[in-house]
Amino acid sequence: MLTTESIMEALREVKDPELNKSLVSLNMIRNIQIQGNDVSLDVILTIRGCPLKIKIQEDVENAIRQLGAERVTVTFGAMTDEERAALSASLRAEQHASREKAPTQSGKAPSTPGIPQTNYIAIASGKGGVGKSTVTVNLAVALARAGKKVGIIDADIYGFSVPDMMGIEQRPTVIDEVILPVERYGVKVISMGFFVEDNAPVVWRGPILGKMLRNFLHEVHWGELDYLLLDLPPGTGDIALDVHQMIPQSKEIIVTTPHATAAFVAARAGAMALSTTKHEILGVVENMSWYTDRNGDKEYVFGRGGGEKLAESLNVELLCQIPLGAPGNVLEDPEYSPSVYSTNHPTGKLYDELARKVTQAITT
Ligand SMILES: Nc1ncnc2c1ncn2[C@@H]1O[C@H](COP(=O)(O)OP(=O)(O)O)[C@@H](O)[C@H]1O
Ligand SMILES: [Mg+2]
Image (tube, rainbow, N blue to C red; front, top):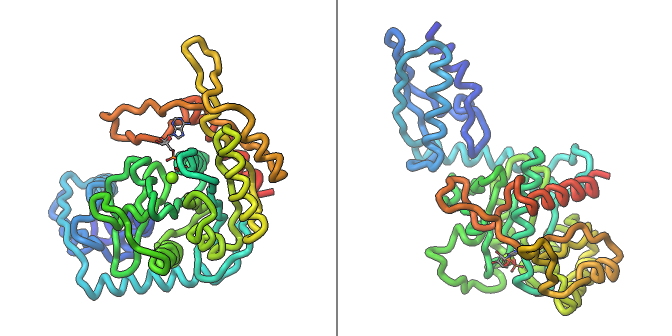
């Protein structure tokens, strides 16, 4: 039977994809009109031009059709400033409450008040260009494939590349002062790149940078997360140190190439993690380990043994070796991204294996 009540009941199950809350509890459903088998209603969005409008419309229409409606007409509106402020305040209050309570999930390291309660994994390297961001992105996607709730903070403030690597063209929704991360491949992402116009160079210095990172932790509405990965800037500079100190409970993964020099420089990043910040190192990932030629033979383009040597010197495990090779995505594919390997790709499988090891290391 089509009644206002049955429609509201059905829409209770439909969630705002960004806030992961029911449209009904968000008070986004208004003005339901029923005429025979035709239903019309207003859906009040948090902001005009909400990027996920189409998804919301589909979900609303499907839910009402299942009740037997033939035609469903959705008219979109936007919250008033007062409504938005009230929502923002309630999101902040909820965020605040969730960050004060003791961690419940197994494996979660002791918490720092005010920041999301989750397992932090910082991805570090000695120098740039070794594949730190590639590893961050693909580990995150592999963890999400395994059913985990995952976020990435692209903390490489000057060299941000995560949005581009994941093929993200959207900007985050901002409700008053609450920032909603952008979701791609099931991973929530926040990056300096979202707040910079047209790839302009970032010229902010010291204090502002620290403040941005703090905001990424404090002001972003992450919701519930199992893992929050941080793509750190390369090396042992101030920003890297800042991040370490903001999140004392973070664990680390160190990325290197097999080249002896890269491994030597990476050892310094590892040493900083251990001595200055007392972060536990989960292990080493060696990237660009070899290239498989036409005949199936491995060519060790960047030398051999760097990862193993680094792992040895840090007294941790060499978690995996990732060969050279592009993901082979096609530009026409709506799921295209320059750097994400699918689970069908041999390298994607290596990342699935890495995700399994990381989960095991953290939950035991
Ligand atoms: N295993 C790999 N095979 C081929 N290209 C790779 C691989 N890993 C990284 N790359 C490429 O190398 C470049 C540097 O990688 P990136 O992840 O940006 O490094 P970093 O974050 O350490 O600076 C990028 O263009 C990236 O696409
Ligand atoms: Mg990078």
